[in-house]
Structures are given as structure tokens and as C-alpha cells.
Image (spheres, rainbow, N blue to C red):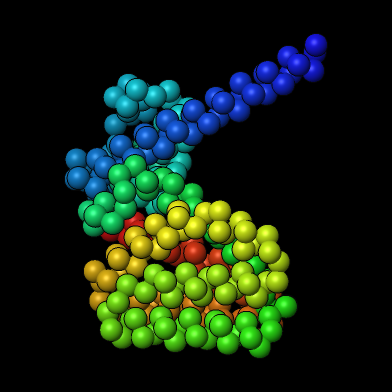
Amino acid sequence: MAAGKRQVRELAASDRQVRDKTLSDRAYESILAKIMDGDIPVGGKLPTEQVLSEELGVSRPVLRQALKQLREDDVVVSRQGSGSYVKRRPEGAVRDFAPVGSIADIQRTFEFRAAIEGEAAYLAAERRLESDLRELREALQELDRCITNGELGVAADEAFHVAVCNAADNKYFVAARSSMKSNILTGMNLTRNLSLTKPQDRLKLVQSEHYAIYDAIERSDQAAARDAMRSHVENARKRIFEG
């Protein structure tokens, strides 16, 4: 009987966490929209937690989760004893390429990728075969061609990252990434479309990060491969909100 009650409590707590996460995502998107629309300018102070929680219809703990994510995205900054301020205004183009309500999920997907693909790159540096290196080079060459011709290059970008997972020689990396493929492609479409709105140097910078991953894998430098991959994925996440 006691075990049954404990399971009920655990399920209730789990349901509450999921509900809070959904609410915090909605609050996050709402505050982000206000910033992107210019309702709260760069340097401007966000309303107090009490005002925001009432306006958005969420509890203050839920609101704090949303504000924490905005701080991690480098969109707002908190000043002790003063409140939260807008640090940067993401471009409106973000909403042209990201489905409504999807930005929180896209950011979470990048976190997943940094963890999974960082470790895949680490093992790839140890286990890669010449055929793996060839597959990576082919993807890089296709990306170079896309940059030269001003093409999006999502398929080639995806091929490169899949090749890293294949080189790790562990089917579970491939399976874990495949389970998130639609989310990953949404993020890639967003980041590469945003890069096309910038000077070509932006895509060249992204490509230099791909080459850093390849070079570390080719040298069998496991730590460097992991760091290069994690840095690349984290940079992609941050570039969404460059402003």
C-alpha cells in the first residue's frame, strides 16, 4: 500500500514538472515576443516578477524558469536588487523561419545535441576509419559548394553531423539523434536561414567550426573533438539571438 501511494506521489510530481515546463515555455515565448517586437527596448527593465506573473497567468516559480532560460540565451541580464534588463533584441527574422511556439523547443534541442554529439565526436576521434574521414570530407566539400553558391546547405550540414555519429561506431548515438531528427532539422533550417541574411563571412565562420571538428577527429584528439563539437552546437544556439 505504501509503495502504491509513493508511486502516485511520484507520478503527480512528474506531471506537475511537465506542466510547469510547458507553462514556462509559454511564458518564455511571450516575454521573448515582447522584446522582439520592441515593447521592451534594449537596456529597458522588464516588469517585476509580480506584474509579469499576473500578466502571463503563471506562478512566480514558473516565471523564474522562463527568465532563467532568457538569461542563458543572453537575451536578458539580472542585476541584483534591481531586476531583469533586456541585453539584446533578437532579429524579427527568427520568427520568419521558426514555427510559432517552437523557439523554446529549438533551444532545448541544441542542449541535447551538445551533449550527444560532443560525446560522439570524442569517440569518433578514437574509432574513425578512413572511410569515415572520407564521408566527413565529402560533407564538408558539399558545404563549401553551398556557401560559394549561396545555398542553404541543410542536407550537407546534417550529413556532416550524422557522419560524426557514424564514426563513433555506436548505434545508440545514431538512434538518439534520429529520434530528434525533425527538431534538429528545424534548428538547422533556422540557423542557416539566418546566416544567409548576413554577409557570407557568417557561413564561413560556421564552416570553420565544422573544419575544427574534422581536424580534431582526423588527428585522433578526443578532447579537442568533443570541445570543438560542443562549442559549435552552443555557438549555433547563441547565434539565433545575436540581435
